[in-house]
Length: 81
Image (cartoon, rainbow, N blue to C red; front, side):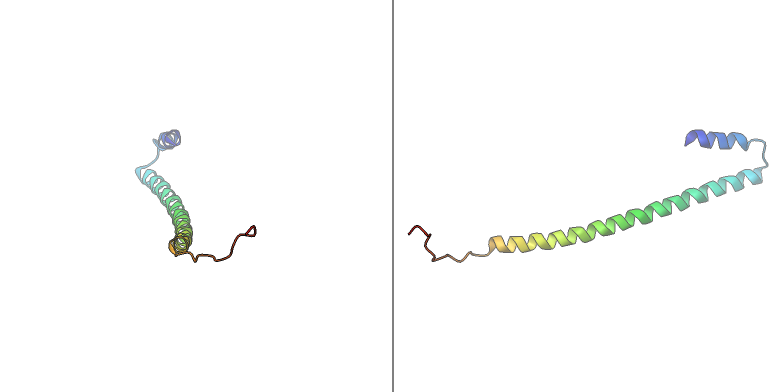
């Protein structure tokens, strides 16, 4: 990335200040657009993961209730009695 930036700045040395500023502005706009896209993708991943966490938390709560509930003693005798 730095090599490309260096090449870009080297190629702009003979350019007018306005064209240099315009080129830099375009580069910055491209970078911001890419970062916005990446941020949107990351937000989607986080949202999906939170939904999964919520489902798993409900399942854990259900299992904890089953484990904590008193079990009813069975009066059935084993088959060998």
